[in-house]
Length: 228
Image 1 (cartoon, rainbow, N blue to C red):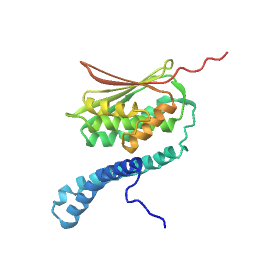
Image 2: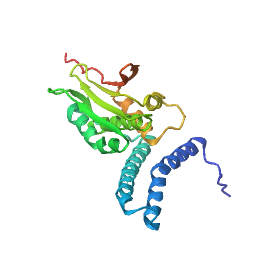
Image 3: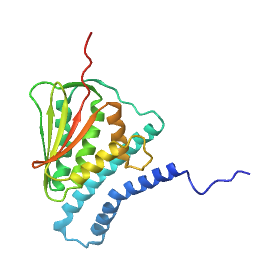
Image 4: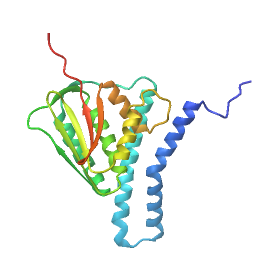
């Protein structure tokens, strides 16, 4: 007779608990907004805001599902980065454009500053964009006051992306702690687990400083191999 345990392994239980917690984040406000629209408890003038809220939370839900799919491939040792010579400028610009509306809804302005010349590194551009998006969302979600986030690309040698913000130090500290936790068994969010793997596979060096001008997070790329 086969006996099935009602208690999953601790690692699996933590993983499932983390997934349930992450799913509640976008689903709860969607459900509340739909109920208010359905029962007419809000005026017609508030309908656009409710639809905007639903749209924003659906974007987060799509990102969460993508992170979940990546996390599964990580668990199965099938997560892949495909480094190739890549100019970082269009990647930084695209991340700023993609996140600008969401940041604006949170009361955060987002800008990007890139040099005129190419900043080429060996990387998987899609994965680097994922990592940048994770850090920026973490900074914005943890702000206390209205904040401005500026992404600066420096290079070409050494290549470095610096994210400056006037608020959100708690979010950055938490994000970098998750990214630096290595193979620790502590449950982190789906996005944090994926971002951590991306940073490790690219051998990135992450730094965090605070001064009178705000909080600064550096993402340094390894130096390009020298040709013999």
